[in-house]
Every structure is written in C-alpha cells, then in structure tokens.
Image 1: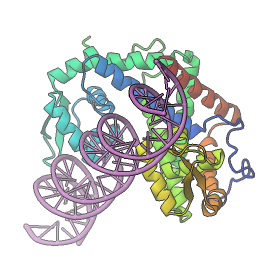
Image 2: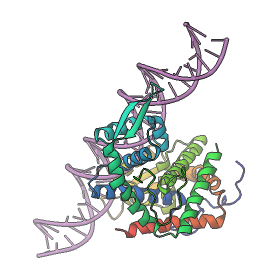
Image 3: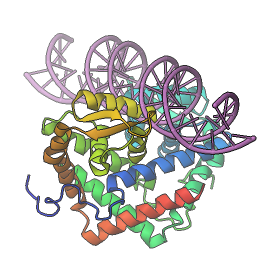
Image 4: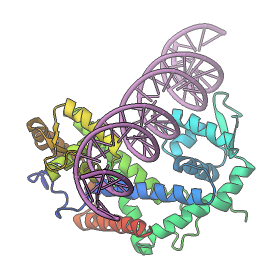
Length: 161
Length: 161
DNA sequence: GGCATATATTTGCCTTGACAAATATAATTC
DNA sequence: GAATTATATTTGTCAAGGCAAATATATGCC
C-alpha cells in the first residue's frame, strides 16, 4: 500500500466542508436522478419501460443485431438478468430473438419495427429531454471536461487490475 | 436519413465518437467501480461489510447518535431497507439501537466501541485508499471541478421539480 | 476423430432495495 | 382532551440483479 501520503491523517477528510457529500455519494445521487427522471419521462409518454429496458433498446438501436452476451456487456448487465429482460421486451413486442447464423449456441437480438419506432419517436426523445435539462447547468466546455474526468477516473480503476 | 444513426441532437454534441459512452453510462460505470473496489478492499482487510453497510458506519461516525430515519436519509436508503441493515450491523456488533429519549417512536443509533474501532482503524482507511487511487488521475483542481459539476447537475435535477 | 476446455443461454437461488401496510407514538386541531 | 393527522419503525411483498449450476454447442489439442 504505497501512495498514502496525502489525506491519511484525518480519518474522513476527503472533503473539507462539514456537509459536502463525498464524491461517491454525489455520483450515486446524480445517477439516481438520471434514472428517475428518464423513467418518469418515459412513463409520461405512456411507455412502460424501466431504465434498464430503455438502455437495452438504445444499445440495440446503436449496435444493430448482436448476441445477448454482447448486448449484456454493452449495458453492463449480468447474462441471467439479460435473459429475463429480453423475455419482457420480446413480450412487449419491441425486440426479437432469432438464431445466430454461425453459432448455434447464440442468439441474434434485434429491434422489431415496433421497437424501432418507439425508440425513434419516443424513447430517444425522452432521454434527450432529460439529459439536456441536466446538462443545461454546464456549458459545452464543462460538459466535455466532466466527461473527460469521469473517463479518466474509470480508466484509473480499470488499470488498477 | 431515417435516423438509424445515434440520437445526438444535443445542443453541444460532445460525443459523437462511435464508442464514447454516454454520460449516464459513464456515471454508472464509475459508481460501480467505486463500490466494487471499496468492497474488495474491505474484504481484503477481513471486514465483512457491504458498501451500504460501509456507508452507514461512515455516516454514523460523522453524525453521532441519530434516528434511523435520519441515517436513512443520509445514505439515501429506504426506511425498510435501513431496518434490515441495522439488524445486520447490530448482529455484527458494530452499532447499537437504544430508545430515543424524547420520542418513543424513534431510535437512537450509534456506533459501539467495536464499530468505532473498525471504522477508524480499517474501514475509513480502505475507502481512502480507493478514493485516492481513483482521484490520482485528477489533480486537486480537477477534483474540485468534478465535484462542482456534479453538484450543479444534481441541483439542476432537483430544481426541476 | 475424440476429448478437454471455453462460451452462450437459461434457470434456480439469494440478497437487496423500493413500496405499501401495520403499529406505535407525537403533534395539531377543534 | 378527543379526534385527526403526521411521523418512526417494522414487516410483507415484489422485482431486479448477481452468482452458480445446467445444457447446448464451439473450439483447440492430441
């Protein structure tokens, strides 16, 4: 455990002000606001979609036909959980499982017409509305910086292993 | 021209690179790395504590004796979930429920000696090690800025309602 | 080819946390 | 001060996601 030189003397001194939430807490709160806001926006448009399901549709649209595993990786979801979400989205008619052409273990997941329509006409608009509102508090340069900082932190974590 | 392309009408389209994760995704990933890293660090020190439990100890230490509701608010946890986490932490001997002196509905939650010791000698050190590692990719000014950006976004969401 | 190992999906099990109902007690209103 | 309303805690129920086992198929090695 090298590198313990900066904040080691004071047990909880990552932040100085008495009430400033820690970085971890802030991130948690921002994320849960995003989730809540997007789900509310989707619901207000009559769409019955969880945030996870919204992500799956988004990635399906971005990636086109992919296997369930690829999709799971793309939305950072466990494989078992993905199976169950796919069940639901298939039941809702937004996507389709077909056999993978080369690999008989795998599936080919893709949006149906309905799914594609919903995504383009409604769901993507909801998320834009929310994210625009959120980012309105930051100017473009700041937005880029925020993105950069988060990516660097993420990288730092990943390099750690 | 049918929008098979990603939905980026953002006023300041920061990210149109093919693989740049969205802000929401980034935040999700950073958070889950933090959680994972802190739990791993705690486990490596022989502490059997979930991230939520770690947060509860942290807040207990910061706030001193408070009611379960106050504690729940401080860690952004549902009241019912808090009851069960308190059960576990009490069983582990890290904290104690006593009756609130003025309000007979409420409790007074506080760290035991063991809890206080564990926190100071081990848990707080774990979290510092992790957060230092994470923030090493950012210089102090950048860390402050990141904090500021997140707080502004959070504020934007909260003002929205 | 035949066998060991790796991967894709599904399913079962478990824990967590949100939400709502139940209970106890406080606070407010009339 | 009795009745209504609000709050603190607990408990039941449910959906979600992580993990591990089961199954099917691929891939690599001899």
